[in-house]
Image 1 (cartoon, rainbow, N blue to C red):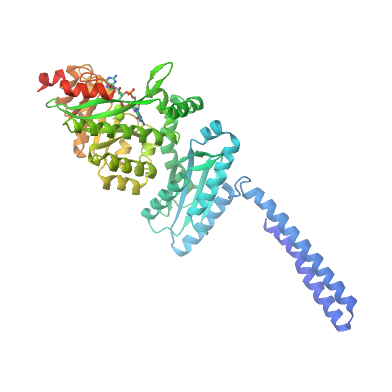
Image 2: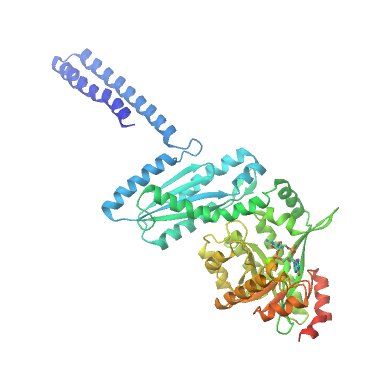
Length: 486
Ligand code: C2E
Ligand code: MG
Ligand code: MG
């Protein structure tokens, strides 16, 4: 590249020489012809030089920039990281490298088409550039992979804040063809000098962290990748008001008293009747539609809580939220609004975070979590013990864990399941959390869950999920087993 630049400069240099000679001569002779010839040569040479420089610049762009977004590609990013390293070794300055891999981009291509996909990438490129300083670098390093080099990072906290800002920015809805599209990303970062001394080490470290987050999404994907048809059909169901919410009681193991209810969504299909959430939630939770679903369920749940209060009882309500939606600022604002209008105390609302969803355990927006905390909303880990939920203990401010039904089912039959339930209950208590046993189907399970240290139980033994009306009736008539347990 440097050689070609030299080639472009020599005509300019020689022009200056010729110019000096000719103009000098022209002026000496005081002939107009001499000066005109000199000026002509100057102009031609300048144009030639400019065109050559432009050609070089275009060739350089092709080799070092992503043609769609115009962002630096991997080669240019590596060069910039090298430069940052040389500078940092001299000045002692720190810098951050962030690896960023979009979640659900393939789905945007599948559902909305490739043109929309390209548009999303273009807009994201500009959005990410808007977050960092001009001296920083945003690069596109793969189909749906970006990287950011941010100079002059003071400490780890500042790096985390940067990651949070990037994620917050890229999650803002993008309007394409009057449809709002949302995207998220798995991210990892590395800080120089702590995380590596070469570009390979730093980028490798950031990539490694990003892939650790991504793994959970791939586990989900292997279970069955997103079905665009199901998502589109679900959109229709939402528009037609076909969603219904059922409720399942949660009870105290020590005395059988009811402490709360979990809200569980279903679709009421005009032909097929009740459709289980297991059929659509795993697909819908990877799209922006999940916010509308969560708000719908939360609104219904708070209405139910209110109605129960009007019947003279006081119960909490639990609403399921996928891991990646818990730090969605718009969801938090929506919940705040619902709490205000319903008049239900925020401490009566528990958000159950399913820890195996996309990106479980990954970095979350601390501001949004702090806002939920400040409001007084409770947070539980759902299906605890399955897949990556242990990592979520680090990233979520928690009040409750719900031990996955698969372990509770084995109580009385499997010593291993009993050991898992007992140790998870102990872990929960050591973290100062309330412990729920999910899927308590028999009296034996109930008794063993209590003996092994669980506080609460939910399951078919006490009550299956039912409509709000059936729940109110169940609460009125009293649970038959209350007397047996008490
Ligand atoms: P989950 O949150 O762990 O909910 C408990 C599931 O276990 C419910 O299934 C419930 O009907 C079932 N269940 C309760 N007691 C027993 C029992 O004793 N034995 C057995 N075998 N199962 C029991 P459901 O309603 O089909 O929901 C399945 C999953 O779908 C939920 O698991 C949750 O992850 C998701 N889901 C349900 N509603 C929503 C929602 O509104 N939003 C989101 N994001 N996810 C939801
Ligand atoms: Mg749940
Ligand atoms: Mg569960």
